[in-house]
Length: 141
Image (cartoon, rainbow, N blue to C red; front, side, top):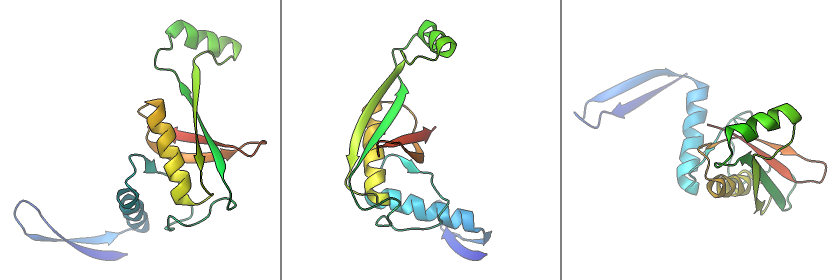
């Protein structure tokens, strides 16, 4: 556990935060990296603890990142039909190339895909490796 001192911005009184757990420290690390990299999306892959943006999650090569989402103009009828027959009439896809398998490059590609899609999903939760070597981006709200 760690102790931190914070200054209240309204009355400038110092406040001591005790018992800050590891999760909170890790969240602060990723938040700082988000600011540093100027990302709109939020990295929610915390399994490895604190890592740098240069940390390689995959091999050092380019990756096509694919993001599939429900079209904003999809109708309830189309959604129901998709649920009934398993087709994907309501789905759309955007892509972006990650320059490498590093956290920073994957985050940048994912951030671009999320922006292209226009969805409200902003939490990067996973990259699923496909048989063809592409990565499917999984997001949350």
